[in-house]
Image (tube, rainbow, N blue to C red; front, side, top):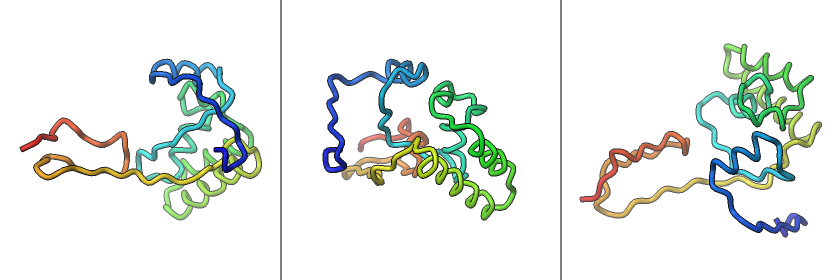
Length: 138
């Protein structure tokens, strides 16, 4: 953050329920997070986080409405991948360039490693879809 010219102090760390409560209520100055794409639909993350009708409580704190909602609605109705990708790019442009709701700071690669003798682990590109119940050590 300092390299980007942003002075940041984190006085304490919240557990997930406390964090969700602050985000859902809109009681924060800056939301710094690494989002997780949970499916192959390129518009799903923008629709989930920034589209008020998504039903996600915190979306009301981030939703620009207007043209963005129109783009999301058209993207969700698209049946052809290229069309969804175009609408997703347009929605991201609105969030980043036009409304400045999102400021990309960098991309993160999620790495997963196991040691010898670990069985049952299956990697998945979505962090929320990693399954740990079958992992065992031999």
